[in-house]
Length: 268
Image 1: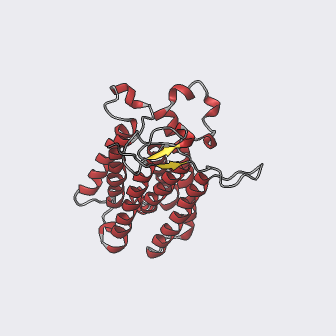
Image 2: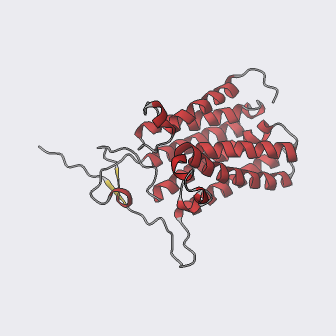
Image 3: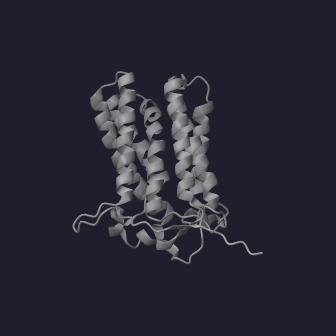
């Protein structure tokens, strides 16, 4: 007896509304929402620690610039340098797509290092331990944006919740793992853990712990879900596809995170 599988046909318009000269997209709305909610959360942290409010405004600018620039350059250099090396003028064209979370993480860390040197005059861990909490939530919003764009899709599957990405494969294409949802749920789960650890425990008093926990959770989950994701190219070709580019970049992030979580008697 033949079993007929029923999948989810996914074909949303990535544009919210087309106004001609202006066509806002779901990805942009979700991306901005993540940052604005993050700003609200970090503001509460600053208030709890009686930190100057002007620091927050400056930190927000540093984070936004660092995240966007880092994510773009991460995509260019980690995933598609062969193309962009021949089309340098297209590197700034982020509206065409192409942002890498690993590059975004590096960009945020570097921008907050500058912020710590120029503005707060504190250890970079002081601000990192705060910013990582809403960053996990922002990651969820970004992955939902990827879902609305029908990008960063999974490998073919026969599970009943598989998505047929019409914009990518056509209406008769294969059902794929909705890895965008897998990651979004994982990042939301990570946010709840980080939020609880910051507000309900004394772990925030250990410099670097929140930052390390963030790296372990986010990039640990990222490593797992890469097994269900369609290849995006990049570094993986250099090691005969034994690991994906996302996994190669996640390993050092997890190891660094474990160092901050497990190190004894940190001095910040």
